[in-house]
Image 1: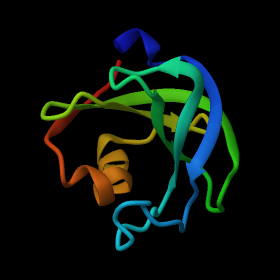
Image 2: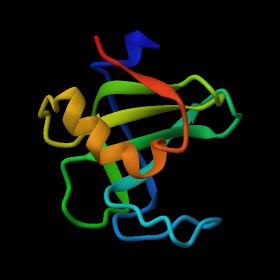
Image 3: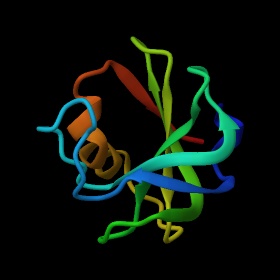
Length: 111
């Protein structure tokens, strides 16, 4: 898992900034959320990512994986991707993803 950190990935945004969760309409995405094209995660679906560094809704992304949020009570890990090569602090990352991760237990993994 740690070896993915520092890699560049590209993919698709299926829940753009400002959109709502398909099953929970009260959950609004304050950042872009999507998946890495062609990489399968533990749940059998494409690898989920939170995308930092954009203040508008995106359709696709290409950026650097700067961290992984490892859920300890779920089988999904979420990759944190920076579009602007900025190294966000742990606090900035957790603040950005807490809208959804507050419902799970986990830890932020860095290099």
